[in-house]
Image 1: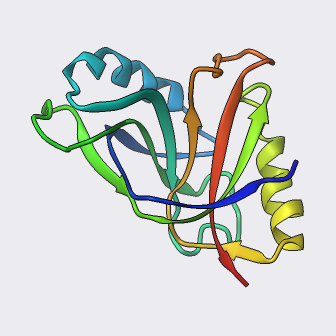
Image 2 (image 1 turned 180 degrees about the vertical axis):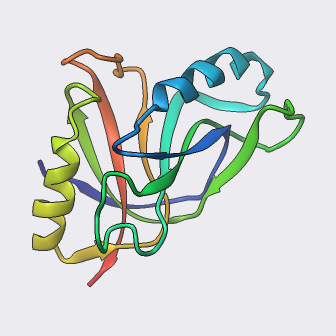
Length: 158
């Protein structure tokens, strides 16, 4: 699996977030709260969903499945205005990303093992301290082996 390397522009998002961990990965609950609020979001840029992970600087130094990180479920908008009180805003800053097209079950985390433990160490890049995210577009089908999504890993040159 070879990624394409791109510098993406900043992206304005609206969504919900919670602190979670790999061992208590209850992101489905966040989606269940978010989906009914979609009709309250104005200025949608597309119908693609974003699944965003914000890790602190030490998260990958000593990995532990119980270590928490901030998880967002969101949609991209052109402007952050007229928000429902339940929703929050977030901006992914511009930057360089390794973008992997993944086909398979979203519950199969082996793709991330490959990215972080095989591809990244052998590449000319290191992780950058920016959001990690997946775009769940028109080819995404929850819990389907034919599902397709794009995985964005923030990078910088070594």
